[in-house]
Length: 307
Image (cartoon, rainbow, N blue to C red):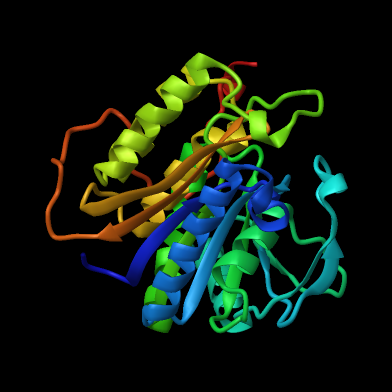
C-alpha cells in the first residue's frame, strides 16, 4: 500500500449497549468482547492517531472536525437515555484537525474546526473512543458526516484525510461508526429477545459482512447504492461510511477482513469489523462509479442559460 500509513480500519456500531449494558444479553456481550479485541490491537500497534468518522454526528453545511484539545462533558443518548449517562474526557490531536481542515478546503470542500467547551460529542464517537481508547493513550480526531453530501463530496473528504495523514507522517487507525441495517423496534424490548428487525435486513447485513470478511472494501463502496436501495437505512448510515472509509484507506480490495461480531441492537444490525491492509487482493474490477480528486460543487440539473 502506497501513500499515508494507515495501519488498519475498524467498523463499529453507534449504539450505547456495548458500553453501558454489555451484560444485558449475549449479543451485547459479544459486541463488547469484539471492541476489546480492537482495543488490544490498537494498543499493540504503533498508531499515533485514531481518526473517527461518525454517522451520528450529522452536519448540514460542510464538514466539521473536532479540535478541542480535551473535550469533556456528560452525554446521554437520545434513544436509550434509560441506560444512563456517559461521562467523557478525550484527548484530541488539534494539529491534525487543522491539517485535515486545510486539506479538505484545498480540495474544494467547505470545512471548519469546532473547539469550545461543552460541544456535544455524539453517541457513536463517545462509545467508540471510550471502548477503543479508554485511557486516551492515543490522540483522536472526529469528523462529521454531512447529511447532504453526495458521493463525490464524500470521496474527496476521505482523500483529504489521506492528505493530512501523509503530510504529518502519522500512523493512523481509521474508525467508522455506523449501523448496518437501522430499522429499530419502536417499543421497549427485553434485551435477551433482541433480534434483527426483519429477515431482509438480516440477509443484506450478512451480504455486507461477506464483503468485509473478504476484504473487499472498494467493492462495497461501489455497490453501496444498490445496497441502500434494498435495505431500509438512513442515507447517512448506508453508503457514506463505505465511500469515506474506502477513499481514506486507499480505494482497493487489498485487505484482510475480520468480522469479530454481528448482533442485533434494538433491531438494528451492529457489527465490529477489522480491515488490515494486505499484499493480496480479491480482484480489481472495472466499476461504473467514477473517481473524484477535487470537489467542484453539486452539478446543476437545469440549463440556466435557457431560462
